[in-house]
Image 1 (tube, rainbow, N blue to C red):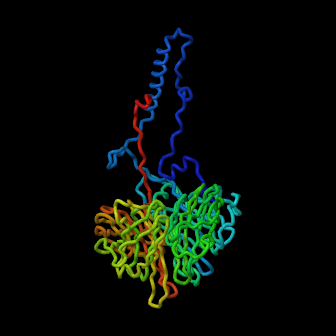
Image 2: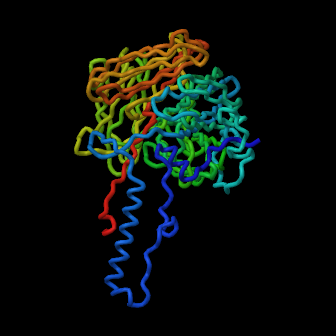
Image 3: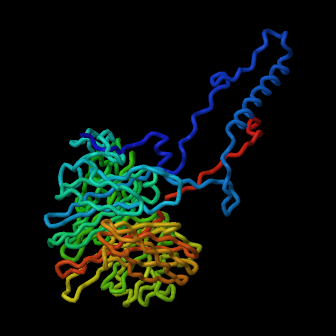
Length: 569
């Protein structure tokens, strides 16, 4: 039985995914749609050439204005800038989840959720389905680029028999309606494939998928969480390593219908790290690959920045870090390089923090280090700044930088006239009273915007970190119904200008199962946000932190206006 398609779509389908309606068919020539074409006079008896040209032009104008009358533009909605535009809800949302690689004692849960909508969309379906299994577990990089070929397991094609809700019969998880999350276990073992997620119709706006893995064996011990992302062509990570007991790997998942060719670019404290094995990696359609970073660095490197670039095709790229028994988690992908980066989500009981920064090859970067505490931005004593050479990576140990207060971290140019794009990540450790610890990684994040959601939350285990990077803000926080029952709850949170507040997640009344958290900026801001999920296990303070980003459930669609002058241009 074939699996559902997450492959490359036709042009109209792509338009639906981005929120734009499918483009209209090209206008036919006047005679093609029944309008009479202008008659051509025989010889010179019908008038001069000038007269003929004028008549032809008049006929063309009549056709143009006729079409304009029959197909007037949609009623414009004027935004703050005065430009005409309409707002449309997305009708199709796709995401990719990494391979679990959970070892012998690990277990992975996939959770999908769509917030209740206010738009006119109805129907639709949401589901998750496995990509093809990788050929081998993560041991080494490919020795040479492979020739694209059909995967061992057929790539998703969408021809599997759908159930009544529109999801394929072999889906691992199906989402029935907005407002209630659904959870299911991922495939087991270290050869488990990545996952493709898809939602259409009323389930598309804000569709969010979380993947959470718990590992209790010494290798990879810890809680690893990640928010599944759309397929793309560029992914930045900061904070990887191949030194000591680190076992870091890149997971590449191609849920498209065509092969992707990928380069993995590594940067250390001496600049780019060249290795032919990191170039031209082919990921077959519907397949997953995992590549150990030590096979690409030619020796241990303590601090790494990683850039995954697709030469052709699209895919999901993820980076997992494991530091022996000291903790493990996914290193989240960063926003694109920028002179200022904000990293939300430092817990009050941070026992250690290490900041890793990469600077663009164009110039060195001199950056201020600031923390957002309960009273606004301040500079941590002893860690006021960091200098990063062009094209290289620099790192600094911040220690117990939060000093028992929650915080967000901001990097910005020391000289506003000398901005250099950077990518930043910070590793945070939390230690228990018995000395056992777990680690998580934060990265540069964008504001939550109108709305953002994180799907997998547990009773008594979730904390929100909200940082207002501008004016004071009011934020609506909504806890959804539980996956097995419960009543949604909404709470308003006030965030002072430049400050960070920690909010124990509100929980649904009568909660049964897991629930989702949705954050909406009601006024002020902008606001960056992160969610910490803390689930102690075997005396280890296991935790993971995910930033919340705008779900882009709506887009502005530009409007065309009637302009007769276009025929003169």
